[in-house]
Image (cartoon, rainbow, N blue to C red):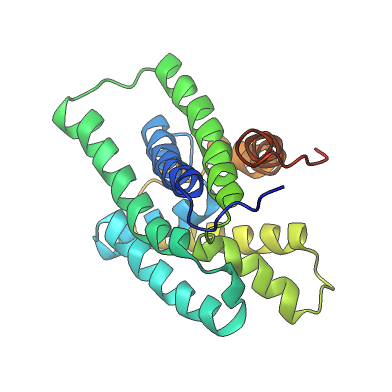
Length: 220
């Protein structure tokens, strides 16, 4: 079977779509008011404390993490890493501004539930897209690989991810409290749903995307 080129149109398409979906996921979680994913929880908490744009702060954190990844697990870096760093935060900021500030959209409880469901689906499908593209992963996603590598795999990847998520959530909540902001805007059922559903759904979507786009068959 002919090997797919690393920078083929298929891979670039999947990478861009995946990263846009992640930005849409963060926006949906923020507008739902049910809490966000761990990394967004940390960045929203800190950016609120610093009175800084979420997108700008997330870009700064990603730049710091990128340096750490470059020094440790360089294989995780690719074009998708750089696009993810810039696009996700600003996509979420733009969508929240568009639907909440510009149009004054009223987010009722049924709509909040729909946003929660969409956010969960966008999160897993977005991750599956850019992982299937194999053009680099987000700096935060690489943190788990760093933990696994430097503990010589005594901490498996799934537990390393749980550890990094816990630290991120704790940091976000701490800064949110110090800023006097409402912690339930960044921490809630959405955070729990994302933690439990993201892994299995990513595996489900990724195996099917790879089968459709690259004729790879995975055991799901």
